[in-house]
Length: 155
Image 1 (cartoon, rainbow, N blue to C red):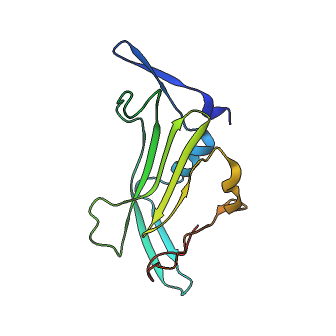
Image 2: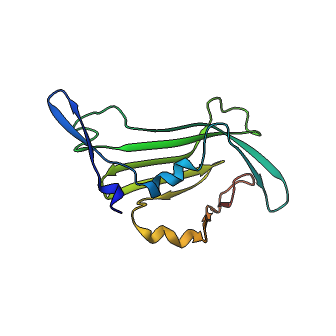
C-alpha cells in the first residue's frame, strides 16, 4: 500500500524525526467507531449484551529517542469501550489498539472484547484476509480455558 509509505517529519531540537503513518485502509479499523456509539450483541443463546464506546484517539506518542522509538515515531490509535454488565472498570477497556512502527509494514492490530482477543501482527500483509467473508471479519477466539462469558468469536 503506497498510502502507508508516506513519511511525515518534525523537528525535535536539531533532529528530524520521521513518522510512520496509517493508510486509509488501516484507519478503517479505528474510524468504524466514535465516542458515544452503542454496540449491541446477541449471543447464540439469544441473550443481549450492550457496550458503549467511550473514547477514540489516533495520535503520535511523545518521542523517546534510541531506547524506544529508533528511527520512526509510531502512529498509534485506540478505541475504548465499557460494557453495561461489567461494573468494576472505571475508564473502560481497549476494544481496538493499533500501532504502526515502520512505514510500509508492521501495522499491528489488537482486538479485545470481554477477555477474548485476536492479534494481527501485520495489517500490511494480506494473510489476515482469511478471516474475511464479504465485508465482515470473523475471528475465532475460543480456547479450552475460556469462561462462559468470554466470546468464542469476535465479528
